Image (cartoon, one colour):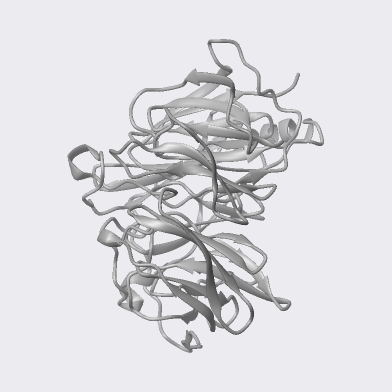
Length: 428
């Protein structure tokens, strides 16, 4: 297999930024830390896209799944601007983003009160996007928080590192400008994956990595078009690796070097590979709209297809794998998409539940937490025997493609136009 191209002394481009609109409230940081510290041991942060284990599954327990007909108590709301980026929560703060006109903004809120701690704005081009107002392409990638840093990739391909408690810029790298890679139709959508001292993003045909401390390029693959997904970590014979879905191919790549371990062709109409690869050991579930989903296996030498399912196609949101079963929204936007359960071992469909559309979902405590594409929040057991809602509530109108976030007794949701809500599900 090939090896990622290492770059030595190439100068990276500085990302543009709008005039700063940042206001740091140090007292809120202290309050957030106190609130977080006082929660039960079952509480857990959600510091990056798809949670701490990168699989859409929260370790949090003790949260309340049974609500009244009015739904959970609303703790606070915010207006973000257009976008799809899920919300990240760490160290008493909630990080969310949205776009208005040609400017995108990353917000840092106090997770308990919703008070704004800081915001950072930067240019964002207009992309033709589904359901976007006047063709506005909003933010897609979630912020990633590690220690005192927050990392995120703009739709224009600029990688930013900010101080997580103040929003001050640590470094930037305009990867699109410096690498000359192909920009996908709706802009770059990858969240940032931390792998040791490196940050890996879905830029180029099989990914790109930079040094976490400086933003300096560590390796890159080629100039091909990426997918709209995020690299997923896995380990091969003790070596850290990532699974990356480009616009036409799925890859297994060594994290430190970019060396390609395996590849599997996966070209879809309009090159709309959005959902992440789902990883289980050396088995990989790959899915996209208008293309049969597959499970493939890598034996260390070659990758082979185990099964194919033509009715299970994740257009927007990535499925979750719970106790040997895949749960996810199957079907394309503007179609009769449904929530389905599929046996990971065989690819056999176990059940089909209507009314969810292409909405996103996560899992916690053996339950599915689903945000339907019409703004309804639904909770039910993750069981191959069928999906029976425990609770459901209409939390906001308009289209919603973003999976919810569960962190420290609160569920955070946002819709495409930028309505954000924080709901109380703590077991008091």
